[in-house]
Structure formats: C-alpha cells, structure tokens
View 1 (cartoon, rainbow, N blue to C red):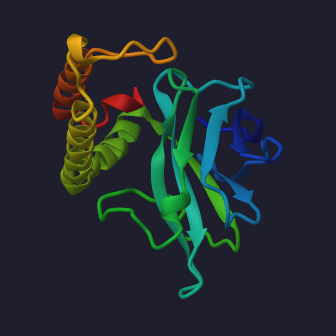
View 2 (view 1 turned 180 degrees about the vertical axis):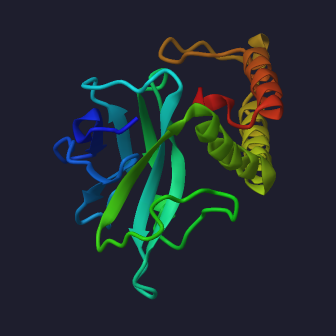
Amino acid sequence: MEPVPAMFGLIVSGRIVQTDFQPLTPTNLVATIPDADNINHVVVFLTGATPFPPDMGGVVFFGWPDDTTGTCNWQLLGYISNEKPSAIFKVSNFKKGSLLGAGCQNPFALHMSKNAQIGISVEPLTSVQQQISQIVTSADGSTATNFREFCTKMLENFMNYASSFSQSQSEMIPNPSQQYVPLSTLQTWYDNFNRRLENNPYFWRA
C-alpha cells in the first residue's frame, strides 16, 4: 500500500492539528514538529480519509536531532492501525540519544532534521507486532522491575501512614464534617492493586 499524506494526523498540545506528512518512500512518511524543545506528548491518528488495508498498520517513530553528530536519532514509539486508530506517546524522555535496540528496524536512518519529526512506516501487521514486541520485552526487564518495586514501596508507605490514624468506633469522636473509610476497605484495595501489579506492571495503562 502507498500511503497518502492526508491519511495521518498529528497533535501537539497547544498547537493546531498537523496533517502535512510528507512521503519519503512509497511506505514511509514524515511530519516535522518545529520548536520541539518543550513538547512532552504527541498524538498520532488516522484522519479517516483512508484506512489501512486489513493486513497493514503503521509503526510510529520519533526523531530528535543530535547536535554532536548532526544526525537524527529515531526512537520507536508504538503503532496505529484500523483497530487502534489513534495513540498518545510520551516523547520528553526521548530527546537524548537513541533508544532503538540493535534489532529494531529504522526506515528513517538516512534522514536528518533540525526539528523533531514523527515518522510513520506502513508495514504488514506481522512486522508491526514484531517490532512492538521489542518495546514490550525491554519494558518487562529492569524498567518493569524498578517500577513494580517503586509501586510496592509506595503502597506500603500509604498503608502504614493510613493505619497510623486508625481508631476503633469507641475511640472515635463524632464529627459531622468528616468522612471515614474503614481500614479494611483500604486493605482490600491494596491487596487487589498489588496482585494486579504482580501479574502485569502496566495494567493501569489499559
């Protein structure tokens, strides 16, 4: 499939919607984000003008210029498809160096830019999923472990703090302006959250 520029849209907070994706190859397009130093998130979406064929999707990349080498570092962000026509990506952490692993495909390696860029590579869904799986595999490593540990410590700290104010009903002084939650309710929430965190550190993204 040869994509058309009006097929994709790009949103940067506080700016007008961009649909000015320029074709680089029959399957790769790029949109430039000027003055991108302060952007934190971008939204990439299908405009509805042209859908993907049923077996195709778009791999989304973020390009950030490297002042030391004069090249553009490209990071794999994620994907969009007919089933997932839009996605929001955090890019603030991707402005230093390249996070592409050795196995990641990068169809924009030869293109340079003084501004940030969003690249979309239209590929078969099998290829899309293979590339996205590398992000998941990486995230399930040390990053996921550190995140799970942080959440566990945060939950324990919250429970300890809340428990320090616990009182029996006989000890409570009536106060119509206050609302109370049984400590058992917090304990149930804590147990459920911790269980889901163990099964999938990123369940909260769903």
